[in-house]
Length: 407
Image 1 (cartoon, rainbow, N blue to C red):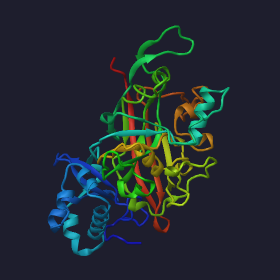
Image 2 (image 1 turned 45 degrees about the vertical axis):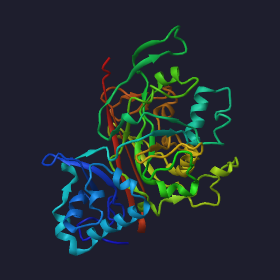
Image 3 (image 1 turned 180 degrees about the horizontal axis):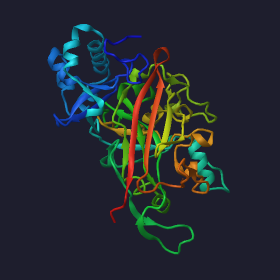
Image 4 (image 1 turned 90 degrees about the vertical axis):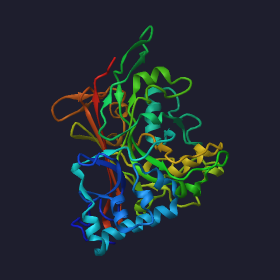
């Protein structure tokens, strides 16, 4: 495994084997710029590119990742190799040291300019649990669930970077026993621990992306918290699905881990008991499941550890499905996996599952309980994946604190 001359432990989750991209500012320099996480520092890659006369200076000396993402996989691979050389070859020591910023001194920004946003529903355990909660007398999975990745089109304008406060949404609510709907702040505010995929290269309208095209179009991976107002969602979702119960905010982690950093994390997806249609049939393609270990922390207390490798539908299948009708991809398109849940109670990625719709509240060390989120609660989701030689690839974290409603 390649090592860096910087004083970074070989097993650091932000080691030279990772090199995730982000966009940051500092108090001294408020202009957004691209950085790469290395240990406890951020490397201002635009600054190094200028100092070394890099051919990729225009892509790296930018305020968002979009120009780099649009350049395509051959450029992504070349740029990653160039940044790796800066951090491993002593001849670049001066240029690197002059462009290192302590991570604690940086303010992270949304790393890309979003285009479209799609959210999926691809954990069989999550979908089964919700089916049991809401349709106890029927089959938990809908008839279409194992034939296609179910999803909905979200609101890209409400994607926010980790650390942004989440204002409790207001809307219409109607419990089953209520005679009529009422309006007010959500009383059943929830999380969804997810993984997100950022699209780099676009496609032409009318031309689907196939399974084998995944690595050509997807630039990298990050963490997502798809905040959900369950009471608003329950009243509105029939017949067209999630709308205002989801669109108020979706938090995204500030670091985008490139696919090239995940070479040791690809695994086979779970065995499928329904044969997929040809455009979704990945049995003879590259392994497209990801082995991510996630952790959900509420107010400093771990409440769940969802395993991403249990996801029934893969990111490659999701990409193929959302373009199979000819829908085009754009640079900055973003799609999320849907809630990640495992077979055990402590692996459920949403409070509606963890508390079984509020019947079994989560107990916290201070003696308090939570069925759903209260004002002031902070949720932090983190994850790592296998790296080379027993290392871990870090994804950082996506965090958000609940603020009181404004209406």
